[in-house]
Image (cartoon, rainbow, N blue to C red; front, side, top):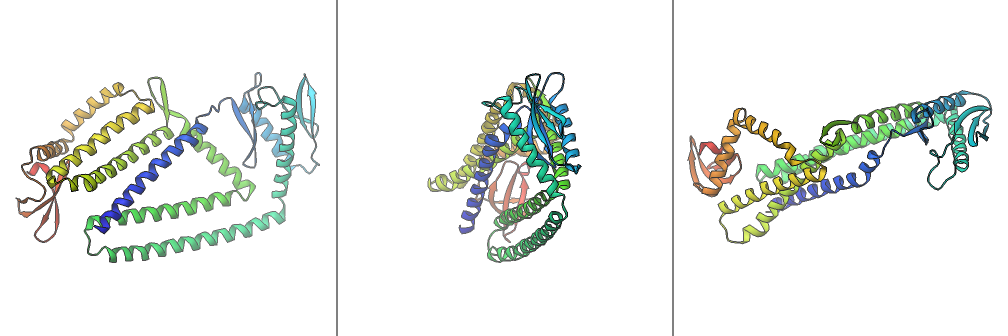
Length: 392
């Protein structure tokens, strides 16, 4: 009972965390990704974004940003003193870098509540600070300090990874000792959860270390920014169009994560129903299993349809897909369909029930669980046997 509660608590916590992360992603990250990027382009120096420019006349935002980026890179390499001025040309403020034209600030470029003249002064300060920082980061003393710091961070990451590996081996050993007398299902569940959490911790450690190291040097910062921009475009570009809505890889991953989180939450809710309500209601174990299975699949089906509707997918447009799936089940998945239909018969007609002693082929034992596709039988030797429902 103790380990059953522990497994239930772990499942509940994991389901809640996944739902919370998905909600936070949809609330904060997705609006930022969904903002239009075609009319804005970033002015970047050494992988650090200074500001964004808009379209202007016959020049696109990206063309203007590319011109400014080229001028800034040349200014960083130049030994001349930095001279940034703002002049009025054609009744618009114009930024000059070392006497050469750099950028004209238009009304579209100015942020809400800011005049073009004010925006030009602000951008001039940002450009001056960015170039000064870029020149300082290319000096020998700075590179020496960052090299030493990078070496120390790398050694610290290796040490932390070693500690996680030791903790993994020690934790698995202690876990196997404490659960030696419990059922193998509980041990496998907790073992999988333990390994998953430690793997995520190790992966996160190296990702954070790599991201931090790339921010120390201007050249690696440029590469990381370019890679991040390519990945962002890859994951946010529409790849699927249904009706009037377009979906990117990010949209599909979030939808898959929400569906997976809902499946975990539905399983957690049905387990709570079984342990907290049905177990004290006096209903026999077979009826409890039937109610649990019916409730779980009903929650999954209703929740999936609601998520698809909220996501903007028209359920009626999926009829062709459902027809194709039905044909696939009929021809390619005959055994699965046969076992699933047999499971429904076992649950509702109850020719056998949980707790019955049965004989199937060469095996004799007690029915422990009746699932949607298979039934678990515990033999006299306390060995769990998985039997397809169609065998009954």
